[in-house]
Amino acid sequence: MATDATTVSEAPAAPGLRRPSLDDLDLPPGKRVRLHRILYEHGLGNGTLLALPVDQGLEHGPVDFLPNPPSADPDFQWRLAVEGNYNAIACHYGLARKYMGAYAGKVPLILKLNGKTNIPSDAEALSPLVSSVEDAVALGADAVGYTLYVGSPKQEEDFRQFQQIREACDRYGLPIVMWSYPRGRAIEEKGGRNSLYAVDYAARVALELGADVVKLNIPGHTAKDDEQPEKYREIEFDYGEGARRVVASAQNCLVLFSGGSRISDEDVLQKARTAMEAGATGLIFGRNMWQRPYAEALEMTKRIHEVLKDFPS
Image 1 (cartoon, helix red, strand yellow):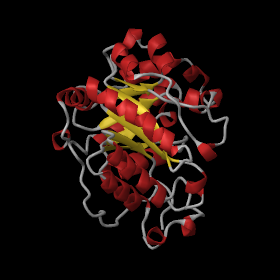
Image 2: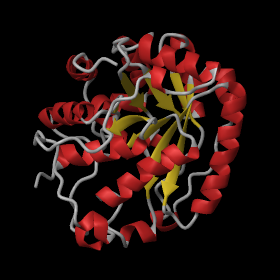
Image 3: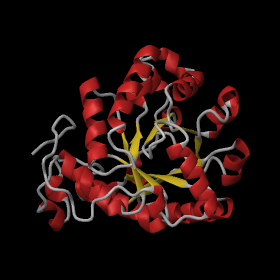
Image 4: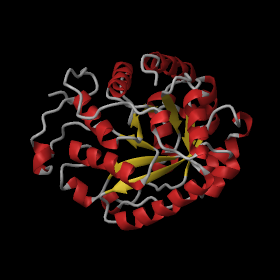
């Protein structure tokens, strides 16, 4: 069984697999206009989506900028998002309010509304609100981002908090991109956060709660596979089939697969192709892009675009 992004899957597609287009989504006009802007008026303009996330400074601390010190200046990522022709940049309020002025209107903004540091344990993970939907409107954002920790003991509070955001987004016509992340003690006792069970559940939760787009990791085999619920222990899958299964579980949520921590150039490109072949709408790659010198980051962006050209929607 394959355990990483370097193996191209030849497994049959999971039941119900398809890549939803904007026309498949029953959306109110405001959300449709903003998603159209992201998908068809930026990036390649072919319905695929390449987003550049810059929320790691809050989530992980300055450590992620150490491999490429110039990337600690948020202007590095804003310039990369514009010059690299990304569909969107995702960041928290401070990086938008203080740095987007020179780039406003040139690349869509996904404003992250909640966040946390990684100093406390993830055993009872909760990402509190740090911005509002009104902040997103004032900044001219085309979507908001919300991190939901599926399976955390704080899940009930997380659900209530998300409900407030969903209701406000419905009022203002802003699409919601959900970072749907399995976390917490119960998840670790049932196969772990990267298991097929956990990521598959996270995909379905995003759909059920009303996200328009969901950010997921591609699941893989872990040392805790035997701790998953019985039905998942019986599933034979490789890397590509794991991606296809969670796309199928997301149904009419547009799926973005995360790049995660820095990997080799070849693995980045293979992960991108595996994600798109699985039916994803696009990619949200951060550290694998901006942890490189600027010229190399632009070049890798071009190579990712070459992959996305093969998957118009």
